[in-house]
Image (cartoon, rainbow, N blue to C red; front, side):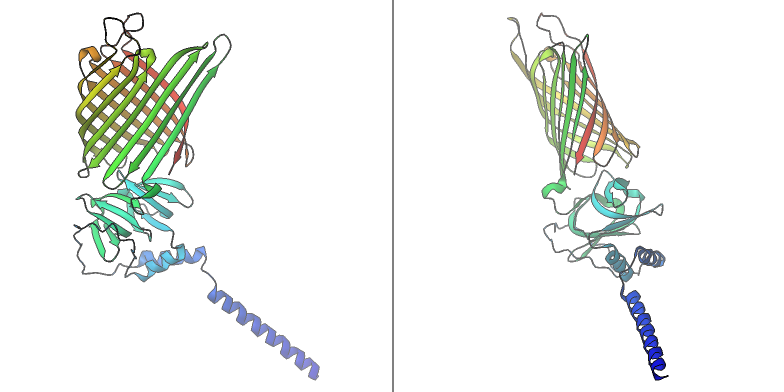
Length: 411
């Protein structure tokens, strides 16, 4: 009998200990994704506490302050940020969608966001309702102020926190860069390559390449590109075209910019152009920038130098003159994965050097993956007064090219 009571008591003790251990394990376990949803649901229903702080005027540049710390009166916002992780950002869209990932930059009214599940996204700035991030950002406003700190967006007000809080309306933000304006976070690039090969009655090899590299800061941008098209038919060269472009722009405000450097290098020996250098400057203005499309124009003087591939006794080996150039750039997002770009430049110079030199590029960029694109490019070069070929006959005014290729983007 005593042994039976002892056994029963031992079993009850083990059951009690097991129940207690299960309760403590549940109490102190890490929050699951469901817990995140509960916290997020509570936060949606929470009203932002009233504050008497007025927006701070941002006349001083405090971009060198790297000891930024986010402060907020909303404790549930802190709980949400803690549950997601210190390296994760989250944004709410006005459509009600909630995204977790990493904010990269803001240019041309579009926020670049690396979503944990959806990959790299471009989101219209006006479609965003709320933001919370503990990253360090460099921000420029439309009045030229530059601030470094962590950010939060709430009710149309962007709050930048460092050693104090700065509040600006959402529509007054011009650019935003993750981190400081140093290192690889301000560089972007793409390399595209395409080829066409045929054999049989006609052996033909043609390939094209396009490389782009750009540097964006809150106050300036540099764009460079190199395009080459090489063709050979039955071991005879039929195409050789090289073009290098570089522009350097300094922002005056959101729409007006100054272009102190506008450089174009061109080579097409089959068109009797050994090298053509066009160096100029100008003033530009952005007419449209609404997140879906962009339109800007640049106008300014330039210096044009042309060295010919061949010349007879009646013509010189090279010529130079002053010129005036107008550049128009247009971009439009046709679809979430399809972008359209148009670049047109006309240079007016002396009649002996060609008169009006026109260069047009149409490009369709189809996104296949986060880093891989398929590109269709159409080139149209026109010279009103074309040069002569090696036999002294005038060349055609128009030159058309169509190119296909796969492009790889970085950063």
